[in-house]
Image (cartoon, rainbow, N blue to C red):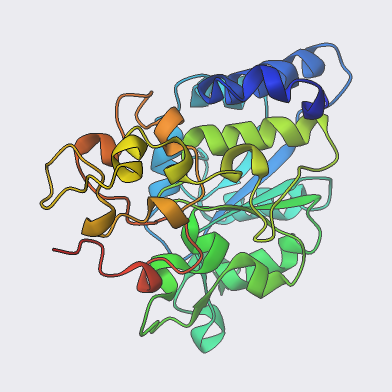
Length: 292
């Protein structure tokens, strides 16, 4: 499916975008036109928040994703086997075509020993080593979450683990899906699009325009208050929170229309200023999160 042919149809209902992409990918897989891709998911230096976010996916949910869209060959948290057997599956998978998903920044201090993800034949295997040997071979590399995309919290000052983003480590094109955590729809939608297309249109920071092509400010339900210069003086007031430090004007995601937890709510909907968690300079460059 070429997305350019249906942009006008889906842009007014962004909540359906991931659904449309997933349905198209699964249809093409069932018809035998494309294959389910092998996916390797590496958790680096982070909190596993993006894995947890993925588990909150609504449609398709994770079970449907794993059964119908992808072959998840390796995941630190989600695969059933462990130990050396798990690492051997990783080694076998990277001999064939696969998509690499990186979660968390990559620690480089002491040659990566601040983040050991496996032990194989008496050797400690670091996330740094695994990302390097798989990242150069992968058909696509997807950095899930702000830490993998730009360094994020893991790279924040003073960065004792000397963490870096996936692109800094690999030096190749990386599809960045920032967010702390990344929305499950952004993950599934990007995977679905790559199943039926050779690539995906990105902005100058490597983010898919499908999900990061506009700012929170563009679609914020409090935009009218901003235009009329009606600003909240305290957290909890129903007006524009720009003067409280809201980073919506400089943060590019579709949070206002997609929302979180199956569309239940989102930070500004809960009277909390956007802290710009999907920005390249989060968290250091977005502080202070709230001004009074």
